[in-house]
Amino acid sequence: MDAKYQELFDKIKDSITKRVPEKKIGIAYSGGVDSTLVSKICKDMNYDITLLTIGFSESHDILFAKEVNEQLNYPHHVLEIDPKDFPSIPSDIHEKIQTDNLSWNENCIAFHYVSKLAKSLGISTVVTANGIDELFCGYNAYREAFSGGESEINKVMDAKLDNELKMMKAVNLIASEFGVQILQPLLSPEFVDYAKTVPITDKITDSEDLYRKHIIRKLAKQVGVPEVSCNKRKKALQYGSKIHKTLLKTR
Image 1 (cartoon, one colour):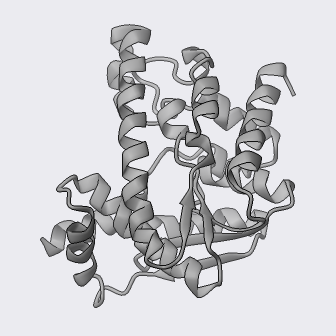
Image 2 (tube, one colour; image 1 turned 180 degrees about the horizontal axis):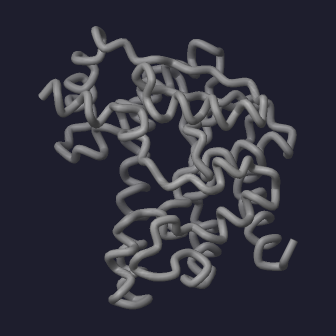
């Protein structure tokens, strides 16, 4: 493994070790490269992991998570959202987190179900891969910022990180009702500081770059993440689970 991939690998492992003391954990899992990389690293570090996938029936995340895990064969549980029960959940969550930010509401709805699934399995700690998209240019906003150069990309990054850290506090407020804690080791100050030193060229190549996160994808391949996951374009949780689509219909 080249030195830069080894360093990234070691930093991810260090961050998980420091931030995730509990050995029995759930991992919020979509089958995408970020959650699969975190799952693989945790498993190889001897964490007792269970993959947790939520979504409406036949949603992208449920189908893709199952497809990828056919190769990994990790313990995997799926919670299919019941369309009959769903309409009451968004209003309850909106009341609790007190914001009209659609993304925050959708993510809190998703983690309501992740936490419900975790609790049903006797799991009190759920690890997420949040932070990778923010720090390694995973979002389309980075393509839009590319023409403005590195300073513009860094501005987007700081705004995305600030939003994510605040949003995950709201997520944990919802998860706490199930006695579940959601941990994001890759949003730790130490990992953020390191990730900002990784050259932008290892993250995004130009304004037409539809894949991005190149150093993450290449590391994932090297540690044995299935190829189908490494090459998958990003699909945010609220879209992959069909929560966004269903929420708009119920409004």
